[in-house]
Length: 265
Image (cartoon, rainbow, N blue to C red; front, side, top):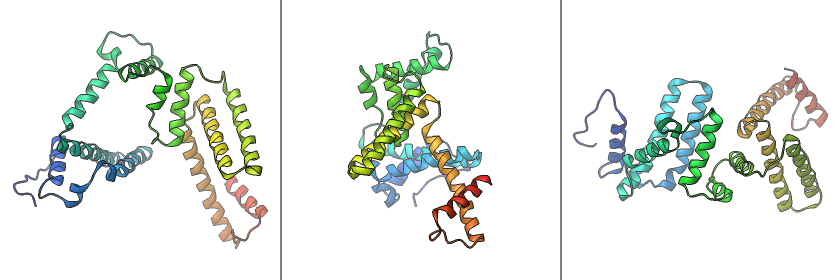
């Protein structure tokens, strides 16, 4: 145990920074001391999704807890660089403060805006300027490949649309989706596995294009569809058990009948 550590009834952000430094320091925790950005990067992703779960559940106590876990990840990654002499938590705070001030000239400057659209447009323009992005391709390259695929494709498509490379309305996007589905059918029927995978990717990308035109978040739509399938399948399984139907041995017609009943319920 670290000597002379003062336990308190309430802690603040600076205490968190100090505790993480203690955990990674001499006489601290062996596990914490050997972690790197790479070994804990999955924890950052996990904690982010747990924050989202708390938001979706509208659970304020859980949200407070999960935000603390997420904050720990930011402090932990910063502490690694503090030890290396690269930057510290004040540098991180300084950077984000300056970014917020620069990207909100309508609040901290003289720029006039007329609604949210102007704010978002200014944000994108200032972001490109500060990052030295002179082309749309450079702006696309700045979208992390590590993002969830649907989210990344949406961001890429929005940047292309801002440059004028887009359908005039949703009908063009729907036609393209149907075209890609036909090509997927052909690839499955007579192509290789690689060709089928390529065409499936085109179908998904085209579906995201449609979602963008109808102002639906593709990630949220797929999550809702998955939830809907899960709920209906659970009913199907219950119905099958009550009717002594072996789902593995049942015909497609029998399963369709159960599925239709689940939809009605």
